Length: 116
Image (cartoon, rainbow, N blue to C red; front, side):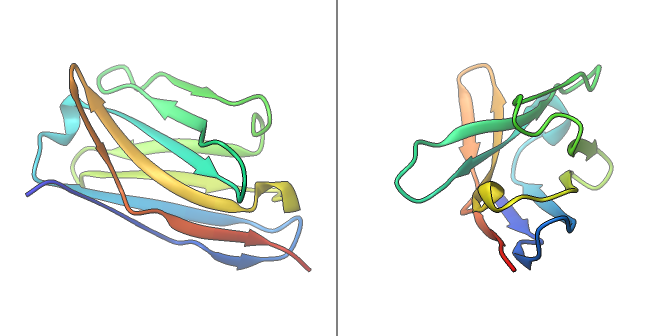
């Protein structure tokens, strides 16, 4: 059974930090590119960060460059999103995504609220 389980969301003040985790199971994690998306209320889901499977190349949305870092631990079947200098506009539900060829899986999401 394929599962992507996100954790680490919560309420944080502007300027603060959070680290999101996504634990994968039920598929060969190391073969998959991993991505973090987010969706704010009334907005479309947007790609935040991505990391490839082998070379671990990364790319980021312009809005988070220099503040967010995506990483993966293939031994733990886990992908992370380190978020720093958080802004109120980062408030959203964050989703983990795994993609390889025609196979694609989604997590259930974790809420991040940036507010004072």
